[in-house]
Length: 283
Image (cartoon, rainbow, N blue to C red; front, side, top):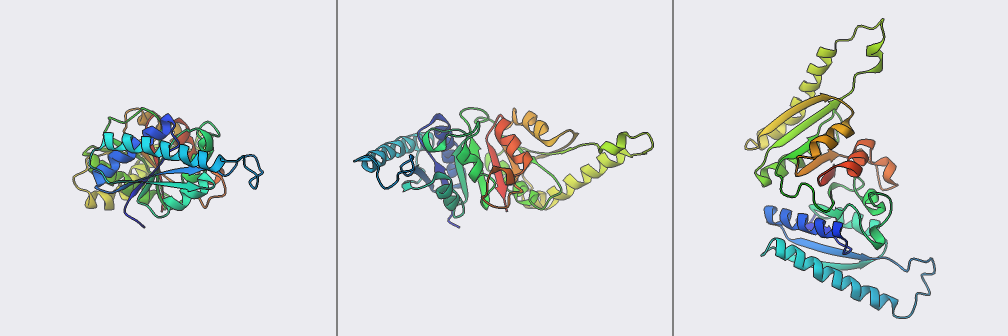
């Protein structure tokens, strides 16, 4: 893994927001920033016969996009080390390869051209959660000036890397960390013949959160932590607290790059609805 931050740009407002976020994080981490632009293959299924001069034109346009992104990054964080890269191919595949060799990948939540797709963006859904490490998804505005980091906590093995990333981000920002565990009452608890200790369940949820945080509290003692347990579905609970956060961190249960559905319903849900940048972290 190369100690650098990679930001993807396509010239859209979301990509500009991603570049600004990446520049801030590069400055906090004292790491170099690499900004990349992916030029898609001729999109009409006749890759052997693109119009004359098409490749030169798209390359020139890509260089202009990169130049604007460099201005955005250095204007945001003067003095950071910025390099650029122009790649040709399928955006999701290129970005997955880059994410696997960098400290983190930062991408816009929506884009133009190769980044267009569903409400969130097809490339985003094919990258976040499908590569080792952290993929940060940024939309224009929202959370840029807030320091609190929120992390979703569950009892899965995938939770550990997300919690670790959240603690590190909270330390770098000098802000607090809110660890949120959302749980739902089992349906059978409402059956008349069933006696269910709801208070006991809530206490067990608190213990699960404390256990998940314990090793990271020791490693980052300077981070002030708020531990929160709520009886709710995880997606709306995390979306609600994201309105006051600078970053929301979730783990990924993804098992590869086969499509958005393997990312996990919680990760996918908060990516669509969160009010602040979202980091999807996979071991």
